[in-house]
Image 1 (cartoon, rainbow, N blue to C red):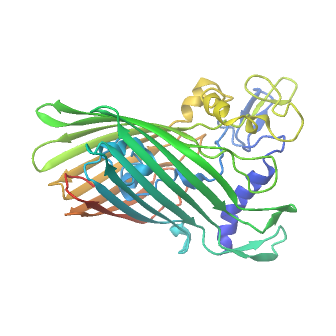
Image 2 (image 1 turned 90 degrees about the vertical axis):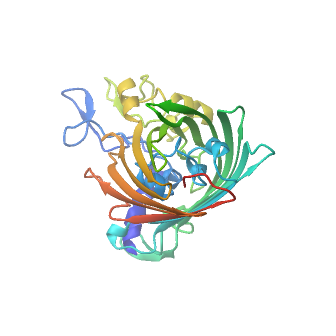
Length: 419
């Protein structure tokens, strides 16, 4: 399983050596233009880097078939990942979901995967409240670790998990709020060393806050509902894998989503959804002033106190979150490039068979993830089954290339329509 080591190695380097006072993104300074560019002369790639990125992996097949939308669509138990407040509008009293997602199957690996189990229950006399919980487990398989000389230094089974609890409540007929708390554990290479630095498991906590507005509508003789959701997830302190004070941000995320659901007739229904997400994490600075010094977008040194830890990584939690909307070295235009767009559509026939499709877009200087998604859904009584498949549309490889993932759902006690 040495392939996995090379997958993880860049992560270790970023975590342990990101305090170096040089460009963090491979960009080059062009003396003729006074700008940073990629080696090929194109716009500078300045991807935002966080620890524990597995927290942002969409864990279920329905959203995975709809371009990763999920903030405002009809909720099931998997709303735990996207928007906990939406669970207050769930049609069922109890919901349970389990998902298995193979990872890096295109490399021929069979022991790398993510498993996700979530459940919710409606409470209160009016059924206007919900409690929920979820467990996410990410296994990186068996790894043979080697040093810089290619010599074996032992084996391990890296893994990460998230344990989350949430509560949601309607404040009015059409408006709800939600809060959540989670424990995050990341063991990538505990017991190993990089440059004589001991690596340990990283542990931290985080919180989610969200709100949803959902209202019935009529459109062209059709009935349905319009839903808008706002969720800020993974709000928590930085994490470290060593004893260093140089800690890394976790992927705090701002998400805004809207969905329009229409019942065409008694047998046919359609849903259209749009999500926009942005990491509320500082953008790495890469600007060089007229003296050739690396500075931030305000012209200040990126290591003003000389402690070899970049200043943008020493911001407080709240300060970093708010400043993330205005700290991109490229100004407003670069900030807009940091938004990730998901669009999805879902068609149901007789509330038993669903066809889904979607598209996910990310700017080429911020990761360049772009892919189409397709999938199917089946429902019979209290049992449901969802499938999704990802089709990449850029030269950026995706760990889910050529991979079929599936979700099992159980809706208990009464039933309206969707999974």
